[in-house]
Length: 132
Length: 311
Image (tube, rainbow over all chains, first blue to last red):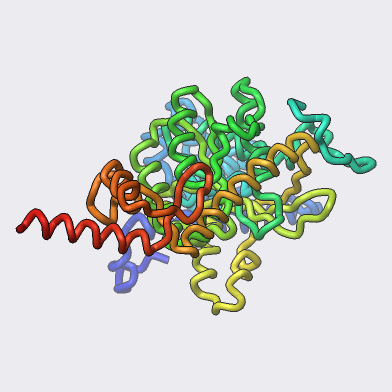
């Protein structure tokens, strides 16, 4: 985590710190949502408060980017659900969770399949892929 | 299937010349050839190499590839007539000439079969020079070049550094029903070359086994008629190469070679030979050949003339 008294944090580029922060926020949200689902399955009256607060943290990390690049109504919808409305429904939580999940994938923070896929049985495709 | 059907060899029971998809070789190879057609349309050079030991069917596959590319352009099968086969060059000199003919007649592919060419001393150097020249100067020809060589590792680094060869078909284990090939991209070829250099002399041929081919495939024989025609062309050029080798081994020289050595014109040499009544040793393909004694007689004659002039 970020520790401004630690030379590692101070010496690390901000973009890298933000990447780690985003991953941390994602993991925290998953953990909270997992707990919510577990309680629901067991018949305990579940609470979305922890999940919502963690979603807020996650959203705030990406908020300037979403505001800058996405459509206004898209931004407003998330903003209102997380920061204006008091109550939140499970459907909305899932919707925002998936949205943020896909967002960090598109930003290559969590993308696993970065290797380009090509047909190896085609000479030209392989030659081009290898820059020849 | 063209002319000469009556001279065709016997067809074995159940022998196939085309697969069910209508081609004499694996469909995957056809897909890769289609890509090469697109490549040359973009004015980029394309060289396909067929390599393999003797009797693996290099020339057969070469002709089948050319037939296929011709068919894509609505052209007939490659002519295999003994006197007229401008798409299939047997030897370096023919290759350059045929390349020009193909360009002129808007043919899309030309094949080169080494046909004993590489047995000559320094043949590889001149072959590589020729290929380098062709691909550095004649890229815009939009002609696919296919060459059949026993081992592609003899080709020049320049070609590979410039990404000219696009695919290799390495032939092996041909049986009486079909031939086999492993296909490698330029990337694969470069790895094979790496292993060829790395492995010790006796096991160099294992370089192919070290690299995973892009795909494997089979090819069938040509029809007996075309196969016979191809044999005739191939035998003729091999005979020619053999004769040239024989001439070289016997130390025979013709008029133009004598003229070159004496720094005189061919006409001068002819007149001197007549005057001195030098008998030629052999006549091969209507060309008179002399043994080395003829050269020393002519040198003496030249010295006499020079001395007489000085006096």
